[in-house]
Image 1 (cartoon, rainbow, N blue to C red):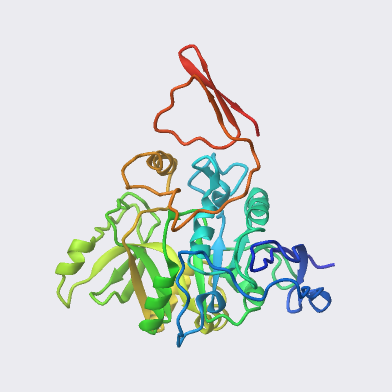
Image 2: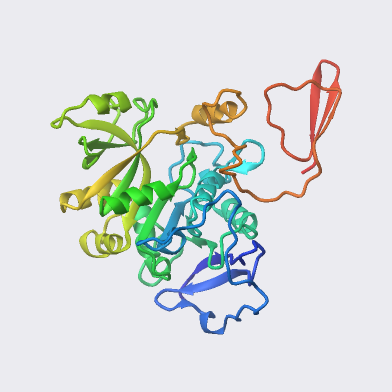
Length: 398
């Protein structure tokens, strides 16, 4: 009997309450969900309209379809080679805790929700038990609209594909039969372990206005990636058109340009900036590249993006100016945690009301502090801090 993949679908009503939560579906390649014809209809008591946050402005009449209907996000929660070991000994990178209450993948999923992207697919494979459990429990009550969902697609084997996912491009190709379920116009490919805040609607607007086939988000801030081998490097012209995609090696240092350099360049100059590994790609372009032009490609960046450039497709760069940390090392992970407690606005802000970070509700009692002085700290729920002589003792209620 052929093995099938396990997919968890989380459906939501417009009020944010879970509706028809289907946690397990066996997927049969080419046939879709086995119980699709027998899924019960929603009762009429559920509202038909979507509820938005108070700070959101009602959408005007647009020539393009709404983002929540035309864009689907593909989030990769793990990788075979982690740079955060031993933190990844029992869990994937996306499931690593940060800032007491969150997981790394929460930042990326929250970016999607705050950008009104409510169709989110999470592709997982390595040490994915903790990540799959977190996603299924954390976002069952999120306000993703009438058709919103967070869908976990675990790696699977089939008669056609006996092995596991061999890379990002291979994973997307083998899951296209699921990803094409909804008639979206673009796919937004995201790494699930990076820490940043971004309004993806601006990327989508730039992509459509420039009529690009692929848009790659690149970091235009002053970041030090010179010592980071394996990072993708974009060679762009003054119109932000990508001319070349390469990987930095240990032997060949790359001098990255910052915003000041870009503004001083003349028409014949080029700049080198680090890719953030975020790709917005047209649906038809994605299917054509993966199935027709490069059916054996394994990695999306080094093979598919390079292949698209060789075919003469229009590949543009979207320059991101904000804070971005790709968790390239244990030291970078430590610094990201320390920066979130500083008063200076240099790190990631977990307390932004306009762009909240969603995670699993823990249902723990409030933290109790008894005769203890605490400075520059982030304390999660369910702790008891007591002063024991010269130091405080922390007790966990979890």
